[in-house]
Length: 376
Length: 162
Picture 1: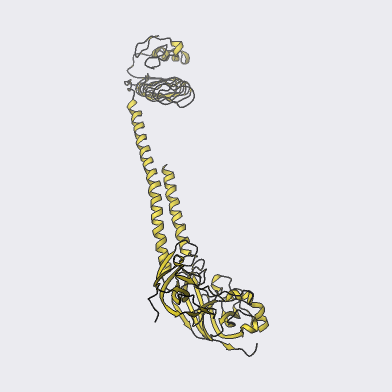
Picture 2: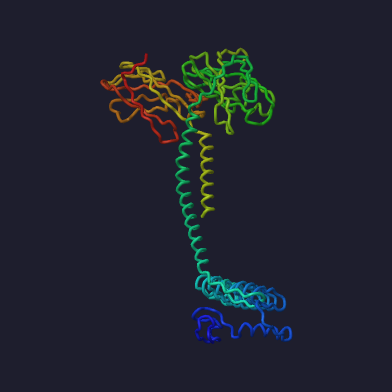
């Protein structure tokens, strides 16, 4: 047959009515012949008089062109069966033809050809199921660009649509429309890549530099501050964390020779009493104590676990760090090694704050003098 | 890509927050040593254990005095005595005197050594035999024992304690 658009002669059966030169779909019958065939088939051969516009037969909506069956042709649209044709669209069967042809259920747009279900855009040609953007979309799928799609398609664009109303001229293939889409997508991609690279590089540099400066600043703050020193007297009760503590006395327990202590040392113990709410929390826990001699030497407290045996022997029970976590009141002794020649020393308690008690908030100091106990 | 960028920035901020918290806990001691001066003891000296030592020929005994500060809230891992090292670069000019060794068979021996609690400053003395004529030497220390950072202090043997 001869292509109605470009005039090329081609084999209709071989090319399924699609012109191999321009890609337009050519029906064997004219639109009017097809339209009349529908009338003959469904309503007993009704014949039209001369009409300016479209023709809807059966259920449908024809604006401009023809709309047999249930369809929706607009402008110069042609909807056959249930379809939707806009502009010069041509839908046959179920479909939507805007501009181009859409036989079967299709949606031709632009100068599209869409037999079956298809979606050609621009000068697309969909047969069967598919999506053709540009030219031809084949098979069930999503061909883009120069695709060929037989089966379910979605042709869009300028088409041919007889129906009711004044036929509108076919819309030219808007290839520039797809070109604009591609250009916009490319710009968005470039911007995305730029943001991505900038965030990687900038984020890393920021993290490193800011992190180091932040670390230095925090470290400087922690190292430079001086906790206040609270001095107390023997026998005075003072608040410590959530407790009330009192340092009662310091007593000599034994010498190097008596107890087999390290050379030049003697064993002393300090009695503390305290009260609190008896709750199990860090605020009721006694810290590790230490003493400081006039010779500027600091010695740590002997653990209550190691001292306990000797404390029981001396009748001076060890005060456990958690004694006030289990009970609202406690009374016990903490032990230290002291230089043989020293008689006086200062007892220190560190009051701490923070989730992990990592920071010394305040120091408490009590000056003590060693006495010899008579009831050992 | 935009989503990944946002996620990456989120990870950066999480890392910064975790780092800030970790620094805030600061569980290592941080020391600062200051040289106060020295004293020439002549050819004999009594070390920390009370033992009298005779200087080698051509050497003089010196007592070097330092202030050792623990700027952190954490008790120092090292004793103040062990925190300061004489510089071995000048080992021919300086002979160190070993620190006093504890007898760990004695009762509560592990509590006989000095400690350096947090936010505390103590005076520490080092004894050394210095070759006659040497006027300068060095000591070094590690502010953070768990870190490789090393600070060197020049020692002038002409700076005497009052």
